[in-house]
Length: 178
DNA sequence: CGCTTTTGACCTGCGC
DNA sequence: GCGCAGGTCAAAAGCG
Image (cartoon, rainbow, N blue to C red):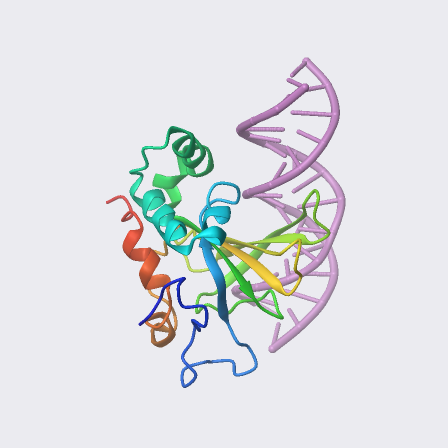
């Protein structure tokens, strides 16, 4: 599968597997790992964005400033919850069916944004992966989804899971502590 | 009846 | 120490 930011027409689900024909789930333009550290890089250069992703997961950055930001952002929670990944994607609805079952546990209005941010936890027992969803401040047709942690169980719908970029980021994620 | 959503309160970290 | 902003909790309501 061609999962790369260089492919602007990358579609989350192949046409014949798209579970929601009305819902064209497209990875819009980048994978961002940190709002102020990496999204700008990703916008400017997808390659740098992916390099940043690698740096983030591997913690191999030699840039002190970035490392501090990484530590500030992920901090101790990295070992606790694992990788944090954010996507910005074009979507009519904020409810993204990514194959997992999510339970909403909070909603918060964010300063400098007219759009509330919604907080979800994976409702599977023992799995405390979180995600937060908010609309793009500048373009309301886009939704920003942030995943935090790595699921300790299979997707309820493995058929779709195998087609999803999850495989790309779980490969980079630190394995859960044994 | 059990699970999910809603929503205000509470907690925590950070900057001043 | 105080205030603000973001994140989480938990009781009540809603829903299938």
